[in-house]
Image 1 (spheres, rainbow, N blue to C red):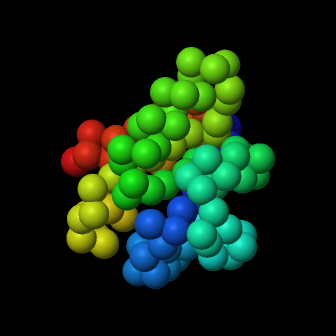
Image 2: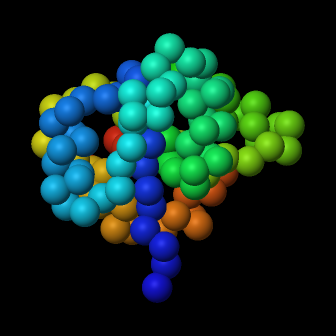
Length: 119
C-alpha cells in the first residue's frame, strides 16, 4: 500500500477550519506556525516541507508556480505542491480529500497540482 500524503500548510493557507477538518479525517497536517517558519520565504517553506517529506499547500499560486518551475529547471526536487484559490472551507476540504485519495505521496514528488482540477 502506498504511503499517505502528508501536508504542510504555508503561512498563507493556515486556515484553522481546513486544518481541523483534515485532522479529524486522520490526514497528517502541519503548519508554518507549528514549524516556526512564519515570516520565512516561500522557498524556505518549500525546502522545509520537502525535508519533512510533506506536500506543501498554499493559496499563493503565482509564487509557487514560479518556484516549481525554478526547481525543475535547476534539477532540484520537492515533495510536491498543491495550490488553490481561496474558496470556502468545505470546498477545499472535499477537493483535498479527493486528491489525497487519488494520488499517493510518491506521485506528488516534483509535481504541482491545482486544486481546481479536483471538483
